[in-house]
Structure formats: structure tokens, C-alpha cells
Length: 218
Image 1: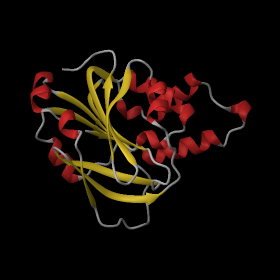
Image 2: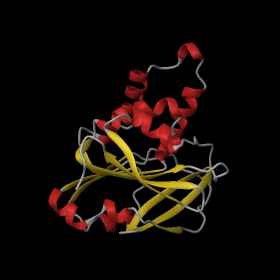
Image 3: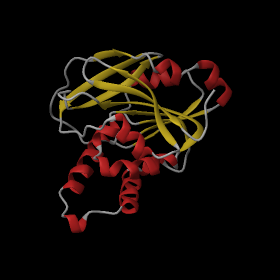
């Protein structure tokens, strides 16, 4: 397991919250995963003991990439640049690649994005999608959330997977995020990636399943 540590916080976390997912069983389908063999898994969360214990049941190589604070800070720094100093799409992809260098040269079968898309402005999503496309397999499936309804709480959430349909939110801190609708995200993802199934939660967030659009998974 490799990881990228986030910045430490002085605020004590509140009580953990458990979310029930209707999409995770499709991501973690036992029969489909068995056909893949040893899995490469990328988790954009933090290395909590409960999630590590959950992943131990799979034959896998796990990369835990706690980059939420770094991505939010990068997004703010880009937004603060003058129009003449805004990076090109290729430059943004390079900066994101350096920021997320712990991904290595691996291609991942499963990617748990959590709230990562909300950490990036719309103009950075194509660069992030281009980077992601370089690191996923043909049978890739991704999972995450996006702010969908106006008024949804903007919080930096630290989550982990603890069951076949169970997510634990360990900490939620008020932070300015970016809202994107589903059509905009799919446009930014390009033809090779797409948001497929979606479930709207009561808190105004859309839980999504992401697929490799170049292949129709069984």
C-alpha cells in the first residue's frame, strides 16, 4: 500500500456517520471481480483500519491516495491566477500528475473517488479525466459522489469503505467546493469514461458509478 498524507487538522472529528450504498454491490460484484484476478485498487480516501480490513478480503494491490487537501489547495491557487497566467489543459494535467504522483504507473480496476470531483473546478475536470484515463483498465469501475442539488452542504468529507454496501464518513469539515451537474461531468470525461448509474441521496449528493465507456462491462 502506498499513500499521500493530507495536512493535519486541529479540529476534532465529530461522530462517524454510516451511509448505505445501492451502487457499491455493482462495483464489488464477487463474480466479476473473480474473473479479473488480482485487483489494482485506488482509494482517494484515508487509510482507516476498518477500510484496510475490508480490502484485505480481496486479492489486491491497494493505493490509498489522501489528496483532498492538496487538490482543494491547488484549485484555489489556480483560481487565484490572472487570466494571462491560467495554465493550459496540458499544463493542468502535468500539475495534477505531479500532485497525484503516488498513483505511479499502475492501471486500476477499481477507483473510489469519494468527493474528489467536487474538489476541482469545471475547467480542471478534463485534465483530471485525461490523467484518470491513463490509469484505468478496460474493465474499470469507479465510485464517488457529486454535489447535485443547490443548497447541498459543502463539506470536505473523509470516508472509507467498510462493507459491501456500507460507507463510513469519519469527518466532515465545512469547505468551499465546486458543484457540477451530471451532463457537464460526462462532457469533461470524454468518450472513454462516463457516469453510468446514479442515486440521489437526501443530502443533495448524487452517488455515481463510473465506467470505461470504450468497453461495455458484463
